[in-house]
Image 1 (tube, one colour):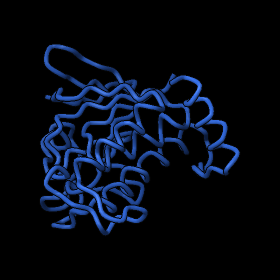
Image 2: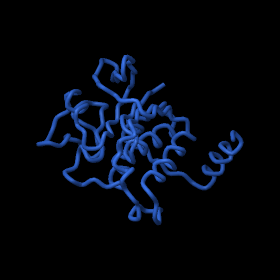
Image 3: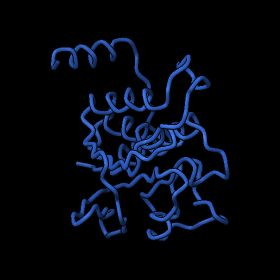
Image 4: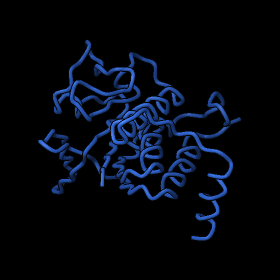
Length: 194
């Protein structure tokens, strides 16, 4: 099974994890919980009237958890390396294998640098799908934008990365578009599990 590892649990990382897991790709998130969202209050995020950033994250975490994302809270990734088959992600003394990696570490670009991603000045260089110069590795949010740090933009970056991964896996452009019957099926199943 395809395995996606997301490093970072803010809007970008959790959006990427939501899209990949929801659409059948095994996804793991490592999150140190040091996101700037804990200092934010949202009233410019579509669909959110006014909400504390921490409350927003709690809701997003419950959402990804409900789809079965394996989420490791408080665990720091210390290295990401490309392999012949994908990537090795190091957390403490443990190594985890992945076919794809999404870096969603805010403005911290250390992992992208150690992975060998190309930079444009101080920013990680990505294409429109958020893929870096290292095939299968994606960078999102503040690490790819100069002072454009905004929750909606970051979530969009994560979604773009996820959709590109899904398109690659499915061999055609993939669209994550649900209809009311999908919601009834999914949320009916989740309600039965609770």
